Image 1 (cartoon, rainbow, N blue to C red):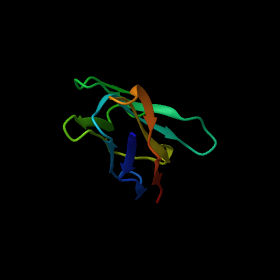
Image 2: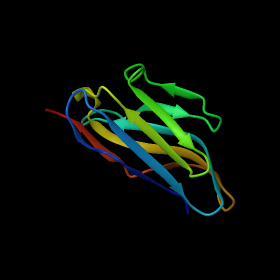
Image 3: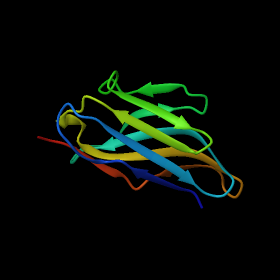
Amino acid sequence: QVTLVESGGGLVQPGGSLRLSCVASGTSIRPNNMRWYRQAPGKERTLVSSISPTGTTNYADSVKGRFTISRDNVKKTVDLQMNSLNPDDTAVYYCNADVFSQQLGFKNYWGQGTQVTVSS
């Protein structure tokens, strides 16, 4: 079984920073592309950022220059450093990854989500 567990959400004032982390767990697993999505109340879930196993990154236009995605292939983690946060960044943030396991092959997995609230 493969699980993704996020941490690091919370309440922050406008202009502040937060760092989200996600760890992939399971037996003999190898994460491939890893991503962060977010879903604001009443809105669809959207892709925030992605990172390949070799470190190639992509960002939504709304977060370029403010958010930085990174990963540790040994620890099987992906982080999202979020700076200059504004109320429009308020959402539940989800970790998503394509993970190879010997038991199940390649599958796509979601974390349970972590709330980020930007408010004064």
